[in-house]
Length: 285
Length: 313
Image (cartoon, rainbow over all chains, first blue to last red):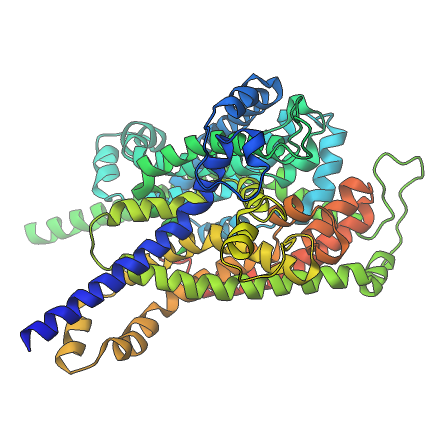
Protein backbone atom coordinates (compact mmCIF):
# COMPACT_ATOMS: atom_id res chain seq x y z
CA UNK A 1 0.00 0.00 0.00
CA UNK A 2 2.69 2.46 1.08
CA UNK A 3 4.89 1.18 -1.73
CA UNK A 4 2.15 1.66 -4.31
CA UNK A 5 1.54 5.23 -3.23
CA UNK A 6 5.20 6.19 -3.23
CA UNK A 7 5.80 4.58 -6.61
CA UNK A 8 2.83 6.51 -7.98
CA UNK A 9 4.34 9.69 -6.58
CA UNK A 10 7.64 8.79 -8.19
CA UNK A 11 5.87 8.24 -11.51
CA UNK A 12 4.22 11.65 -11.19
CA UNK A 13 7.60 13.19 -10.46
CA UNK A 14 9.15 11.52 -13.50
CA UNK A 15 6.29 12.67 -15.73
CA UNK A 16 6.68 16.20 -14.39
CA UNK A 17 10.40 16.37 -15.11
CA UNK A 18 9.85 14.80 -18.52
CA UNK A 19 7.37 17.57 -19.34
CA UNK A 20 9.72 20.20 -17.96
CA UNK A 21 12.55 18.75 -20.03
CA UNK A 22 10.42 18.89 -23.18
CA UNK A 23 9.57 22.53 -22.49
CA UNK A 24 13.22 23.40 -21.98
CA UNK A 25 14.25 21.63 -25.18
CA UNK A 26 11.50 23.48 -27.06
CA UNK A 27 12.74 26.81 -25.68
CA UNK A 28 16.43 26.22 -26.15
CA UNK A 29 16.78 24.06 -29.27
CA UNK A 30 16.50 26.89 -31.86
CA UNK A 31 19.26 28.76 -30.00
CA UNK A 32 21.39 25.64 -29.93
CA UNK A 33 20.81 25.15 -33.64
CA UNK A 34 21.81 28.73 -34.44
CA UNK A 35 24.92 28.30 -32.30
CA UNK A 36 25.93 24.97 -33.82
CA UNK A 37 25.42 26.40 -37.31
CA UNK A 38 27.54 29.42 -36.43
CA UNK A 39 30.53 27.28 -35.46
CA UNK A 40 30.19 24.82 -38.35
CA UNK A 41 32.39 25.44 -41.40
CA UNK A 42 30.47 25.89 -44.66
CA UNK A 43 31.66 22.55 -46.07
CA UNK A 44 30.06 20.72 -43.14
CA UNK A 45 27.06 23.04 -42.93
CA UNK A 46 25.93 22.36 -46.47
CA UNK A 47 26.07 18.58 -46.42
CA UNK A 48 23.55 15.86 -45.74
CA UNK A 49 22.92 14.10 -43.46
CA UNK A 50 23.02 17.08 -41.15
CA UNK A 51 25.63 17.07 -38.36
CA UNK A 52 24.02 17.63 -34.97
CA UNK A 53 27.36 18.27 -33.33
CA UNK A 54 29.91 20.03 -35.54
CA UNK A 55 32.85 17.71 -36.20
CA UNK A 56 35.35 20.51 -36.79
CA UNK A 57 34.06 23.57 -34.94
CA UNK A 58 35.48 26.90 -36.01
CA UNK A 59 35.10 30.58 -35.16
CA UNK A 60 35.62 31.64 -38.77
CA UNK A 61 32.03 32.79 -39.17
CA UNK A 62 32.37 35.11 -36.17
CA UNK A 63 35.67 36.47 -37.45
CA UNK A 64 34.18 37.20 -40.84
CA UNK A 65 31.07 38.83 -39.42
CA UNK A 66 33.05 41.02 -37.04
CA UNK A 67 35.58 41.96 -39.69
CA UNK A 68 32.73 42.92 -41.98
CA UNK A 69 32.53 46.67 -41.39
CA UNK A 70 28.81 46.73 -42.21
CA UNK A 71 27.79 44.52 -39.35
CA UNK A 72 29.86 46.31 -36.70
CA UNK A 73 28.52 49.58 -38.08
CA UNK A 74 24.99 48.21 -37.60
CA UNK A 75 25.80 47.24 -34.01
CA UNK A 76 27.02 50.76 -33.36
CA UNK A 77 23.97 52.29 -35.06
CA UNK A 78 21.59 50.18 -32.99
CA UNK A 79 23.44 51.11 -29.81
CA UNK A 80 23.21 54.81 -30.68
CA UNK A 81 19.53 54.69 -31.59
CA UNK A 82 18.41 52.48 -28.70
CA UNK A 83 20.40 54.48 -26.12
CA UNK A 84 19.16 57.84 -27.38
CA UNK A 85 15.56 56.70 -27.48
CA UNK A 86 15.81 55.24 -23.98
CA UNK A 87 17.38 58.36 -22.47
CA UNK A 88 14.87 60.64 -24.21
CA UNK A 89 11.90 58.53 -23.14
CA UNK A 90 13.03 58.42 -19.52
CA UNK A 91 13.87 62.12 -19.40
CA UNK A 92 10.56 63.20 -20.90
CA UNK A 93 8.43 60.41 -19.48
CA UNK A 94 9.55 60.73 -15.85
CA UNK A 95 7.93 64.18 -15.57
CA UNK A 96 4.63 62.94 -16.96
CA UNK A 97 4.68 59.83 -14.76
CA UNK A 98 5.34 61.98 -11.70
CA UNK A 99 2.31 64.12 -12.54
CA UNK A 100 0.10 61.12 -13.28
CA UNK A 101 1.31 59.06 -10.35
CA UNK A 102 1.39 61.69 -7.58
CA UNK A 103 -1.00 64.51 -8.47
CA UNK A 104 -4.76 64.67 -8.35
CA UNK A 105 -5.84 67.08 -11.06
CA UNK A 106 -8.58 67.76 -13.56
CA UNK A 107 -7.93 65.81 -16.73
CA UNK A 108 -5.83 63.07 -15.17
CA UNK A 109 -8.12 60.25 -16.26
CA UNK A 110 -8.35 61.27 -19.94
CA UNK A 111 -4.57 61.62 -20.10
CA UNK A 112 -4.17 58.14 -18.60
CA UNK A 113 -6.57 56.77 -21.21
CA UNK A 114 -4.59 58.46 -23.98
CA UNK A 115 -1.32 57.04 -22.66
CA UNK A 116 -2.79 53.54 -22.31
CA UNK A 117 -4.24 53.51 -25.82
CA UNK A 118 -0.96 54.92 -27.15
CA UNK A 119 0.89 51.89 -25.76
CA UNK A 120 -1.16 49.84 -28.19
CA UNK A 121 -0.87 52.22 -31.10
CA UNK A 122 -0.22 50.24 -34.29
CA UNK A 123 2.93 51.68 -35.87
CA UNK A 124 1.78 50.70 -39.32
CA UNK A 125 -1.22 53.06 -39.02
CA UNK A 126 0.90 56.17 -39.45
CA UNK A 127 3.65 54.81 -41.67
CA UNK A 128 2.55 56.82 -44.73
CA UNK A 129 2.54 60.22 -43.10
CA UNK A 130 5.67 59.50 -41.07
CA UNK A 131 7.37 58.48 -44.29
CA UNK A 132 6.40 61.84 -45.79
CA UNK A 133 7.36 63.73 -42.62
CA UNK A 134 10.77 62.03 -42.47
CA UNK A 135 11.38 62.91 -46.12
CA UNK A 136 10.18 66.50 -45.69
CA UNK A 137 12.43 67.06 -42.68
CA UNK A 138 15.36 65.68 -44.66
CA UNK A 139 15.78 62.82 -42.17
CA UNK A 140 15.25 59.96 -44.63
CA UNK A 141 18.07 57.43 -44.42
CA UNK A 142 19.42 58.86 -41.16
CA UNK A 143 19.45 57.57 -37.59
CA UNK A 144 17.55 60.70 -36.54
CA UNK A 145 14.48 59.41 -38.34
CA UNK A 146 14.56 56.33 -36.12
CA UNK A 147 15.31 58.16 -32.87
CA UNK A 148 12.36 60.46 -33.50
CA UNK A 149 9.83 57.86 -34.59
CA UNK A 150 10.75 55.19 -32.03
CA UNK A 151 9.42 57.55 -29.34
CA UNK A 152 5.93 56.56 -30.52
CA UNK A 153 6.22 53.20 -28.82
CA UNK A 154 8.82 53.83 -26.11
CA UNK A 155 7.45 57.02 -24.56
CA UNK A 156 3.83 55.98 -23.79
CA UNK A 157 5.04 52.64 -22.46
CA UNK A 158 7.62 54.37 -20.26
CA UNK A 159 5.00 56.77 -18.89
CA UNK A 160 2.51 53.97 -18.25
CA UNK A 161 4.92 51.71 -16.37
CA UNK A 162 6.70 54.51 -14.47
CA UNK A 163 3.34 55.89 -13.34
CA UNK A 164 2.64 52.63 -11.54
CA UNK A 165 6.06 52.88 -9.87
CA UNK A 166 5.33 56.42 -8.69
CA UNK A 167 1.93 55.35 -7.36
CA UNK A 168 3.48 52.67 -5.19
CA UNK A 169 5.49 55.17 -3.16
CA UNK A 170 4.16 56.10 0.28
CA UNK A 171 2.47 59.48 0.47
CA UNK A 172 4.31 60.48 3.67
CA UNK A 173 7.53 60.96 1.72
CA UNK A 174 6.48 63.97 -0.25
CA UNK A 175 4.29 65.31 2.55
CA UNK A 176 7.42 65.46 4.69
CA UNK A 177 9.24 67.23 1.87
CA UNK A 178 6.38 69.74 1.46
CA UNK A 179 6.33 70.43 5.19
CA UNK A 180 10.03 71.21 4.95
CA UNK A 181 9.11 73.79 2.32
CA UNK A 182 10.22 71.95 -0.83
CA UNK A 183 8.60 72.84 -4.16
CA UNK A 184 7.08 70.06 -6.25
CA UNK A 185 10.13 70.08 -8.53
CA UNK A 186 12.53 69.79 -5.59
CA UNK A 187 10.41 66.98 -4.17
CA UNK A 188 10.57 65.26 -7.52
CA UNK A 189 14.33 65.57 -8.01
CA UNK A 190 15.54 65.16 -4.44
CA UNK A 191 13.06 62.71 -2.95
CA UNK A 192 11.03 60.74 -5.48
CA UNK A 193 13.34 60.33 -8.47
CA UNK A 194 16.15 58.62 -6.51
CA UNK A 195 13.57 56.25 -5.06
CA UNK A 196 12.22 55.33 -8.50
CA UNK A 197 15.68 54.21 -9.64
CA UNK A 198 14.56 50.55 -9.88
CA UNK A 199 11.56 51.65 -11.93
CA UNK A 200 13.78 53.72 -14.20
CA UNK A 201 16.10 50.75 -14.75
CA UNK A 202 13.18 48.46 -15.60
CA UNK A 203 11.43 50.82 -17.99
CA UNK A 204 14.72 51.91 -19.50
CA UNK A 205 15.63 48.31 -20.18
CA UNK A 206 12.27 47.56 -21.78
CA UNK A 207 12.48 50.69 -23.93
CA UNK A 208 16.02 49.75 -24.95
CA UNK A 209 15.03 46.22 -25.95
CA UNK A 210 12.04 47.37 -28.00
CA UNK A 211 14.14 49.98 -29.81
CA UNK A 212 16.98 47.49 -30.38
CA UNK A 213 14.51 44.98 -31.87
CA UNK A 214 12.49 47.36 -34.07
CA UNK A 215 12.22 46.47 -37.74
CA UNK A 216 9.34 48.17 -39.58
CA UNK A 217 10.54 51.77 -39.30
CA UNK A 218 14.19 50.82 -39.74
CA UNK A 219 13.20 49.04 -42.95
CA UNK A 220 11.09 51.94 -44.19
CA UNK A 221 13.21 54.95 -43.21
CA UNK A 222 16.78 53.85 -43.94
CA UNK A 223 18.27 52.82 -47.22
CA UNK A 224 22.05 52.52 -47.26
CA UNK A 225 24.05 49.94 -45.24
CA UNK A 226 25.89 52.64 -43.28
CA UNK A 227 22.57 53.52 -41.60
CA UNK A 228 21.31 49.98 -41.02
CA UNK A 229 20.44 48.84 -37.53
CA UNK A 230 21.11 45.25 -36.43
CA UNK A 231 17.68 43.95 -37.39
CA UNK A 232 18.09 45.36 -40.88
CA UNK A 233 21.66 44.06 -41.13
CA UNK A 234 20.41 40.56 -40.31
CA UNK A 235 17.57 40.89 -42.81
CA UNK A 236 19.72 42.20 -45.65
CA UNK A 237 22.75 40.11 -44.76
CA UNK A 238 25.10 40.18 -47.71
CA UNK A 239 28.59 39.23 -46.62
CA UNK A 240 31.44 40.08 -48.95
CA UNK A 241 32.30 36.40 -49.30
CA UNK A 242 29.49 33.90 -49.76
CA UNK A 243 31.89 31.04 -50.42
CA UNK A 244 29.90 29.90 -53.42
CA UNK A 245 26.78 29.16 -51.41
CA UNK A 246 23.55 30.97 -52.08
CA UNK A 247 22.93 32.25 -48.57
CA UNK A 248 25.70 32.45 -45.99
CA UNK A 249 23.71 30.76 -43.22
CA UNK A 250 26.77 30.18 -41.06
CA UNK A 251 27.56 33.90 -41.02
CA UNK A 252 23.92 34.84 -40.50
CA UNK A 253 23.70 32.51 -37.51
CA UNK A 254 26.95 33.96 -36.10
CA UNK A 255 25.43 37.43 -36.45
CA UNK A 256 22.18 36.38 -34.74
CA UNK A 257 24.17 34.88 -31.86
CA UNK A 258 26.18 38.11 -31.50
CA UNK A 259 22.98 40.16 -31.36
CA UNK A 260 21.32 37.75 -28.98
CA UNK A 261 24.12 37.54 -26.37
CA UNK A 262 23.71 41.04 -24.87
CA UNK A 263 19.94 40.51 -24.71
CA UNK A 264 20.37 37.16 -22.97
CA UNK A 265 22.76 38.67 -20.43
CA UNK A 266 20.45 41.62 -19.72
CA UNK A 267 17.45 39.32 -19.45
CA UNK A 268 19.13 36.92 -17.06
CA UNK A 269 20.38 39.74 -14.81
CA UNK A 270 17.18 41.73 -14.75
CA UNK A 271 14.55 38.99 -15.21
CA UNK A 272 12.66 39.78 -12.00
CA UNK A 273 12.47 43.48 -12.84
CA UNK A 274 11.50 42.85 -16.43
CA UNK A 275 8.66 40.56 -15.41
CA UNK A 276 7.52 43.09 -12.79
CA UNK A 277 7.61 45.87 -15.39
CA UNK A 278 5.80 43.85 -18.00
CA UNK A 279 3.07 42.78 -15.65
CA UNK A 280 2.70 46.38 -14.49
CA UNK A 281 2.43 47.43 -18.12
CA UNK A 282 0.24 44.63 -19.40
CA UNK A 283 -1.88 43.30 -16.60
CA UNK A 284 -2.56 46.55 -14.80
CA UNK A 285 -6.06 45.94 -13.44
CA UNK B 1 -16.51 83.71 26.67
CA UNK B 2 -13.06 82.30 26.35
CA UNK B 3 -14.67 79.18 24.99
CA UNK B 4 -16.21 81.08 22.11
CA UNK B 5 -12.94 82.85 21.31
CA UNK B 6 -11.28 79.51 20.92
CA UNK B 7 -14.07 78.36 18.66
CA UNK B 8 -13.77 81.41 16.44
CA UNK B 9 -10.02 80.96 16.30
CA UNK B 10 -10.43 77.36 15.19
CA UNK B 11 -12.95 78.39 12.62
CA UNK B 12 -10.63 81.03 11.16
CA UNK B 13 -7.81 78.52 11.14
CA UNK B 14 -9.97 75.91 9.41
CA UNK B 15 -11.19 78.35 6.74
CA UNK B 16 -7.65 79.47 6.03
CA UNK B 17 -6.60 75.85 5.79
CA UNK B 18 -9.38 75.08 3.34
CA UNK B 19 -8.43 78.10 1.26
CA UNK B 20 -4.79 77.08 1.34
CA UNK B 21 -5.73 73.57 0.33
CA UNK B 22 -7.86 74.94 -2.52
CA UNK B 23 -4.97 77.09 -3.70
CA UNK B 24 -2.68 74.10 -3.41
CA UNK B 25 -4.92 71.93 -5.56
CA UNK B 26 -5.13 74.50 -8.37
CA UNK B 27 -1.38 74.93 -8.00
CA UNK B 28 -1.07 71.16 -8.28
CA UNK B 29 -3.18 71.09 -11.43
CA UNK B 30 -0.97 73.75 -12.98
CA UNK B 31 2.24 71.90 -12.04
CA UNK B 32 0.83 68.61 -13.27
CA UNK B 33 0.01 70.00 -16.70
CA UNK B 34 3.42 71.66 -16.86
CA UNK B 35 5.02 68.28 -16.23
CA UNK B 36 2.86 66.70 -18.91
CA UNK B 37 3.70 69.21 -21.65
CA UNK B 38 6.87 67.52 -23.02
CA UNK B 39 5.19 64.12 -23.25
CA UNK B 40 2.01 65.49 -24.79
CA UNK B 41 4.03 67.55 -27.28
CA UNK B 42 6.00 64.50 -28.42
CA UNK B 43 2.86 62.36 -28.64
CA UNK B 44 1.14 65.06 -30.69
CA UNK B 45 4.12 65.47 -33.00
CA UNK B 46 4.91 61.82 -33.69
CA UNK B 47 1.47 60.24 -33.33
CA UNK B 48 -1.60 62.46 -33.44
CA UNK B 49 -0.60 64.82 -36.23
CA UNK B 50 0.68 61.92 -38.38
CA UNK B 51 -2.56 60.06 -37.68
CA UNK B 52 -4.68 62.99 -38.85
CA UNK B 53 -2.43 63.38 -41.86
CA UNK B 54 -2.77 59.68 -42.67
CA UNK B 55 -6.54 60.03 -42.66
CA UNK B 56 -6.23 63.07 -44.94
CA UNK B 57 -3.84 61.28 -47.29
CA UNK B 58 -6.24 58.36 -47.56
CA UNK B 59 -8.69 60.69 -49.35
CA UNK B 60 -6.06 61.81 -51.88
CA UNK B 61 -4.07 60.33 -54.76
CA UNK B 62 -0.84 61.38 -53.04
CA UNK B 63 2.41 59.81 -54.25
CA UNK B 64 5.82 60.37 -52.76
CA UNK B 65 8.19 62.38 -54.95
CA UNK B 66 5.71 62.68 -57.78
CA UNK B 67 5.54 65.63 -60.15
CA UNK B 68 1.76 65.32 -60.28
CA UNK B 69 0.01 67.54 -57.71
CA UNK B 70 -1.84 65.78 -54.92
CA UNK B 71 -5.61 65.87 -55.45
CA UNK B 72 -8.56 65.19 -53.18
CA UNK B 73 -10.30 62.13 -54.59
CA UNK B 74 -12.85 61.54 -51.85
CA UNK B 75 -13.69 57.91 -51.20
CA UNK B 76 -11.98 56.59 -54.33
CA UNK B 77 -9.22 54.78 -52.38
CA UNK B 78 -11.76 53.16 -50.07
CA UNK B 79 -13.97 52.14 -53.00
CA UNK B 80 -10.93 50.49 -54.55
CA UNK B 81 -10.00 48.93 -51.21
CA UNK B 82 -13.37 47.17 -50.98
CA UNK B 83 -12.79 45.55 -54.38
CA UNK B 84 -9.08 44.86 -53.79
CA UNK B 85 -8.73 41.08 -53.65
CA UNK B 86 -5.10 41.31 -52.53
CA UNK B 87 -6.20 43.27 -49.48
CA UNK B 88 -9.01 40.80 -48.86
CA UNK B 89 -6.49 37.96 -49.00
CA UNK B 90 -4.24 39.81 -46.58
CA UNK B 91 -7.12 40.12 -44.10
CA UNK B 92 -7.78 36.38 -44.39
CA UNK B 93 -4.08 35.59 -43.90
CA UNK B 94 -3.86 37.89 -40.88
CA UNK B 95 -7.00 36.53 -39.23
CA UNK B 96 -5.97 32.90 -39.86
CA UNK B 97 -2.53 33.64 -38.41
CA UNK B 98 -4.12 35.34 -35.38
CA UNK B 99 -6.49 32.42 -34.78
CA UNK B 100 -3.77 29.75 -35.08
CA UNK B 101 -1.21 31.53 -32.92
CA UNK B 102 -3.61 32.75 -30.24
CA UNK B 103 -5.12 29.31 -29.73
CA UNK B 104 -1.75 27.58 -29.57
CA UNK B 105 -0.16 30.23 -27.40
CA UNK B 106 -2.95 30.22 -24.85
CA UNK B 107 -3.11 26.42 -24.53
CA UNK B 108 0.65 25.88 -24.55
CA UNK B 109 1.21 28.96 -22.41
CA UNK B 110 -1.23 27.75 -19.80
CA UNK B 111 0.42 24.33 -19.74
CA UNK B 112 3.88 25.87 -19.30
CA UNK B 113 2.60 28.28 -16.65
CA UNK B 114 1.09 25.39 -14.66
CA UNK B 115 4.34 23.41 -14.87
CA UNK B 116 6.52 26.35 -13.88
CA UNK B 117 4.13 27.34 -11.09
CA UNK B 118 4.93 24.20 -9.10
CA UNK B 119 8.09 24.26 -7.04
CA UNK B 120 11.19 22.51 -8.35
CA UNK B 121 14.92 23.03 -8.49
CA UNK B 122 15.96 25.51 -11.15
CA UNK B 123 12.62 27.30 -11.26
CA UNK B 124 14.25 30.74 -11.29
CA UNK B 125 16.47 29.78 -14.19
CA UNK B 126 13.54 28.35 -16.13
CA UNK B 127 11.59 31.58 -15.71
CA UNK B 128 14.58 33.59 -16.90
CA UNK B 129 15.06 31.27 -19.87
CA UNK B 130 11.41 31.83 -20.78
CA UNK B 131 12.05 35.53 -21.25
CA UNK B 132 14.80 35.04 -23.82
CA UNK B 133 12.71 34.20 -26.92
CA UNK B 134 10.61 37.27 -26.13
CA UNK B 135 13.69 39.49 -25.74
CA UNK B 136 15.34 38.72 -29.09
CA UNK B 137 14.35 40.57 -32.27
CA UNK B 138 11.67 38.90 -34.39
CA UNK B 139 14.03 39.23 -37.35
CA UNK B 140 16.47 36.99 -35.50
CA UNK B 141 13.92 34.32 -34.61
CA UNK B 142 12.55 34.39 -38.17
CA UNK B 143 16.04 33.88 -39.59
CA UNK B 144 16.84 31.10 -37.11
CA UNK B 145 13.68 29.24 -38.04
CA UNK B 146 14.02 29.88 -41.76
CA UNK B 147 17.34 28.06 -41.60
CA UNK B 148 15.84 25.18 -39.62
CA UNK B 149 13.10 25.01 -42.29
CA UNK B 150 15.66 24.87 -45.14
CA UNK B 151 14.50 22.29 -47.68
CA UNK B 152 17.89 20.59 -48.14
CA UNK B 153 20.06 21.30 -45.10
CA UNK B 154 17.38 22.14 -42.54
CA UNK B 155 17.13 20.24 -39.28
CA UNK B 156 13.38 19.58 -39.61
CA UNK B 157 13.70 17.77 -42.91
CA UNK B 158 16.74 15.91 -41.65
CA UNK B 159 14.93 14.84 -38.50
CA UNK B 160 11.52 14.04 -40.00
CA UNK B 161 12.66 12.56 -43.31
CA UNK B 162 16.23 11.27 -43.15
CA UNK B 163 16.31 10.10 -39.52
CA UNK B 164 12.76 9.24 -38.53
CA UNK B 165 11.15 8.68 -41.92
CA UNK B 166 7.91 10.33 -40.84
CA UNK B 167 7.72 12.19 -44.17
CA UNK B 168 8.76 10.67 -47.47
CA UNK B 169 10.41 13.72 -49.04
CA UNK B 170 12.05 16.96 -48.00
CA UNK B 171 9.44 19.67 -47.64
CA UNK B 172 10.01 23.33 -48.47
CA UNK B 173 8.16 24.44 -45.35
CA UNK B 174 8.30 28.15 -46.15
CA UNK B 175 7.77 28.00 -49.90
CA UNK B 176 4.93 25.47 -50.19
CA UNK B 177 1.59 27.25 -49.71
CA UNK B 178 0.16 24.20 -47.91
CA UNK B 179 2.65 24.58 -45.08
CA UNK B 180 3.82 28.18 -45.12
CA UNK B 181 1.19 29.69 -42.84
CA UNK B 182 1.67 26.88 -40.32
CA UNK B 183 5.43 27.23 -40.54
CA UNK B 184 5.32 30.94 -39.88
CA UNK B 185 2.80 30.49 -37.07
CA UNK B 186 5.19 28.05 -35.41
CA UNK B 187 7.85 30.77 -35.30
CA UNK B 188 5.50 33.21 -33.60
CA UNK B 189 4.23 30.53 -31.23
CA UNK B 190 7.79 29.66 -30.22
CA UNK B 191 8.68 33.30 -29.62
CA UNK B 192 5.53 34.35 -27.79
CA UNK B 193 4.26 31.32 -25.85
CA UNK B 194 6.84 31.69 -23.04
CA UNK B 195 5.82 35.33 -22.68
CA UNK B 196 2.14 34.38 -22.53
CA UNK B 197 3.07 31.75 -19.95
CA UNK B 198 4.78 34.39 -17.81
CA UNK B 199 1.70 36.63 -17.92
CA UNK B 200 -0.53 33.69 -16.96
CA UNK B 201 1.96 32.67 -14.28
CA UNK B 202 1.59 36.10 -12.71
CA UNK B 203 -2.16 35.43 -12.63
CA UNK B 204 -1.69 31.96 -11.14
CA UNK B 205 0.48 33.24 -8.34
CA UNK B 206 -2.29 35.53 -7.13
CA UNK B 207 -4.60 32.57 -6.45
CA UNK B 208 -4.28 31.81 -2.71
CA UNK B 209 -3.14 28.26 -1.94
CA UNK B 210 -5.76 27.70 0.80
CA UNK B 211 -8.45 27.58 -1.91
CA UNK B 212 -6.78 24.43 -3.23
CA UNK B 213 -6.27 23.04 0.27
CA UNK B 214 -9.98 23.46 0.99
CA UNK B 215 -10.83 21.75 -2.31
CA UNK B 216 -8.52 18.85 -1.49
CA UNK B 217 -10.20 18.45 1.90
CA UNK B 218 -13.55 18.38 0.10
CA UNK B 219 -12.23 15.55 -2.06
CA UNK B 220 -11.87 17.40 -5.37
CA UNK B 221 -9.30 15.79 -7.66
CA UNK B 222 -6.66 17.63 -9.70
CA UNK B 223 -8.82 18.02 -12.82
CA UNK B 224 -11.83 19.24 -10.87
CA UNK B 225 -9.57 21.74 -9.14
CA UNK B 226 -8.28 22.94 -12.49
CA UNK B 227 -11.74 23.41 -14.03
CA UNK B 228 -13.53 24.71 -10.94
CA UNK B 229 -10.81 26.88 -9.38
CA UNK B 230 -7.82 27.63 -11.60
CA UNK B 231 -9.63 28.44 -14.83
CA UNK B 232 -12.33 30.71 -13.34
CA UNK B 233 -9.85 32.59 -11.15
CA UNK B 234 -7.43 32.94 -14.03
CA UNK B 235 -10.10 34.41 -16.30
CA UNK B 236 -9.04 38.06 -15.93
CA UNK B 237 -5.41 37.23 -16.73
CA UNK B 238 -6.46 35.11 -19.71
CA UNK B 239 -8.73 37.87 -20.99
CA UNK B 240 -6.06 40.55 -20.79
CA UNK B 241 -3.47 38.28 -22.43
CA UNK B 242 -5.95 37.42 -25.16
CA UNK B 243 -6.72 41.02 -26.05
CA UNK B 244 -3.08 42.02 -25.75
CA UNK B 245 -2.03 39.23 -28.12
CA UNK B 246 -4.88 39.87 -30.54
CA UNK B 247 -3.62 43.40 -31.09
CA UNK B 248 -0.11 42.14 -31.75
CA UNK B 249 -1.27 39.42 -34.11
CA UNK B 250 -3.48 41.78 -36.16
CA UNK B 251 -0.63 44.17 -36.87
CA UNK B 252 1.98 41.45 -37.43
CA UNK B 253 4.67 42.54 -39.85
CA UNK B 254 8.24 41.48 -39.00
CA UNK B 255 8.01 37.71 -39.14
CA UNK B 256 6.02 37.71 -42.40
CA UNK B 257 8.25 40.24 -44.11
CA UNK B 258 11.45 38.45 -43.16
CA UNK B 259 10.25 34.98 -44.13
CA UNK B 260 8.05 35.75 -47.14
CA UNK B 261 8.79 39.30 -48.24
CA UNK B 262 5.75 40.82 -49.94
CA UNK B 263 4.57 37.47 -51.30
CA UNK B 264 1.07 37.86 -52.59
CA UNK B 265 -0.48 34.68 -51.27
CA UNK B 266 0.94 35.12 -47.78
CA UNK B 267 1.13 38.75 -46.80
CA UNK B 268 -0.54 40.37 -43.84
CA UNK B 269 -2.44 43.65 -43.80
CA UNK B 270 0.60 45.46 -42.41
CA UNK B 271 2.93 44.01 -45.07
CA UNK B 272 0.51 45.07 -47.81
CA UNK B 273 0.28 48.61 -46.42
CA UNK B 274 4.04 48.97 -46.02
CA UNK B 275 4.65 47.65 -49.50
CA UNK B 276 2.22 50.15 -51.04
CA UNK B 277 3.73 53.06 -49.13
CA UNK B 278 7.46 52.36 -49.41
CA UNK B 279 7.98 50.10 -52.43
CA UNK B 280 5.26 51.65 -54.63
CA UNK B 281 5.49 55.19 -53.09
CA UNK B 282 1.67 55.09 -53.15
CA UNK B 283 1.20 57.06 -49.93
CA UNK B 284 -2.45 57.79 -50.74
CA UNK B 285 -3.67 54.24 -51.17
CA UNK B 286 -1.24 52.91 -48.57
CA UNK B 287 -2.72 55.36 -46.08
CA UNK B 288 -6.23 54.09 -46.82
CA UNK B 289 -5.04 50.57 -45.97
CA UNK B 290 -3.42 51.94 -42.81
CA UNK B 291 -6.67 53.60 -41.77
CA UNK B 292 -8.53 50.34 -42.32
CA UNK B 293 -6.01 48.50 -40.13
CA UNK B 294 -6.23 51.24 -37.54
CA UNK B 295 -10.03 50.97 -37.40
CA UNK B 296 -9.94 47.19 -37.06
CA UNK B 297 -7.36 47.38 -34.27
CA UNK B 298 -9.04 50.43 -32.72
CA UNK B 299 -12.16 48.38 -32.01
CA UNK B 300 -10.05 45.97 -30.01
CA UNK B 301 -8.19 48.76 -28.20
CA UNK B 302 -11.48 50.28 -27.06
CA UNK B 303 -12.53 46.87 -25.79
CA UNK B 304 -9.22 46.55 -24.01
CA UNK B 305 -9.21 49.97 -22.38
CA UNK B 306 -12.77 49.61 -21.15
CA UNK B 307 -12.03 46.14 -19.82
CA UNK B 308 -9.17 47.46 -17.73
CA UNK B 309 -10.04 49.90 -15.04
CA UNK B 310 -7.73 52.83 -15.47
CA UNK B 311 -9.19 54.70 -12.52
CA UNK B 312 -7.86 53.82 -9.10
CA UNK B 313 -5.17 51.55 -10.47
